[in-house]
Image 1: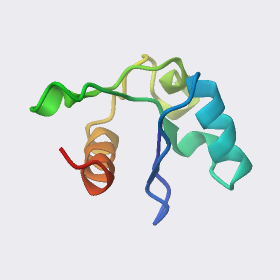
Image 2: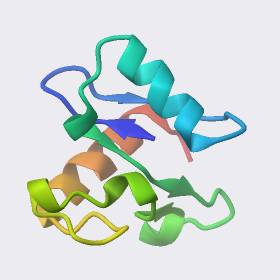
Image 3: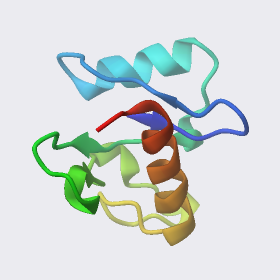
Image 4: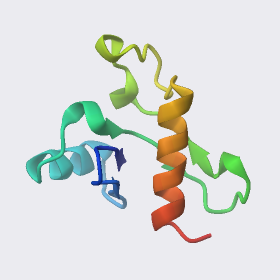
Length: 88
């Protein structure tokens, strides 16, 4: 789970369910439209390390009509946040 909102740029990981991470971030001031669901695959070293697949990414109002992250700009921001926090 990644949050992108101004300078917040947080990642929440390691919960039994992704919805637990979503609730944690929302309870601590994050906004729903700034939350994006991703998966990590630590055994993969290239760009496939990050999978952009989550039900919370389905957001027709925001123009995201798939479980992926359709916007190249948002995908780049997510990758930048991941690279900031995750050392591989």
